[in-house]
Length: 338
Image 1 (cartoon, helix red, strand yellow):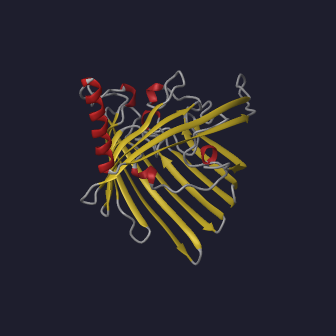
Image 2 (cartoon, helix red, strand yellow):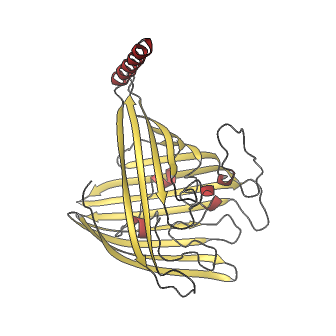
Image 3 (cartoon, helix red, strand yellow):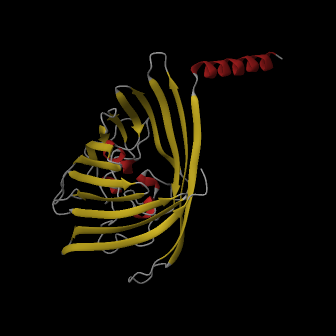
């Protein structure tokens, strides 16, 4: 009887504490499924496949008496678009997902600070070219039915392979970091991020102490910065942004260099019609490993339908010369509901 009474009191105390704090809890997610066919010149490649990208996210947020908003964001993520392994901090090899993002944030009229595993400022403030489906032809491609790095070792999607196999703009996406975002001033917003180290391959847990600062495959002191403007002039929506990312080699070998990447984008909206282009370039953390990417696109929104088309061009320095890729996409998406 005493145990039952104590448990009841504990539950009442927790309920009272939560209600008093007025914590707002949100739970959401999505599932995106794709079936695709690709005919490529290289022998031995599958022609038809089914791929998916799914996510569950959860948030908790409260505003303190002094006006400071404090919250937590977490994302359970899973995709089977080839190449994702546990070493990438992405998806385990048996296909089960794990926390892609997990961070605490603080915000007020002075701006916002994210602390933990989250996207960096250059990623958050980027402007992408429009298209039919951002997972296939956008700035954060996560589904592909062709082999973008076949034969040359360079992943020729919009965002190239940066330090530790991550995409360049999102090179610090899975590293713990501090990010500061300013409030918007007349449509302008800026941000900066800092990550002490990017060595995902060590997968060092929080209780194992410090990792090595002299890893031959490691990068450290990563800085990402971004600037964005969103506005409207004479009924035309204008969105323009740019960003810079860099990370230092812990040990610089022959032919290697510190990693650097630039991105810029512009999108114009005329009612339901959107047109735009984006560009990025990175040095592949090598003396002679530059990759330049350009994508241009258009979309049109009609109720629950979005029709889009895009053109993508990539030029990459590879052994023996330069590899160029042109990709054209067109399609439509339909949203069934929230």
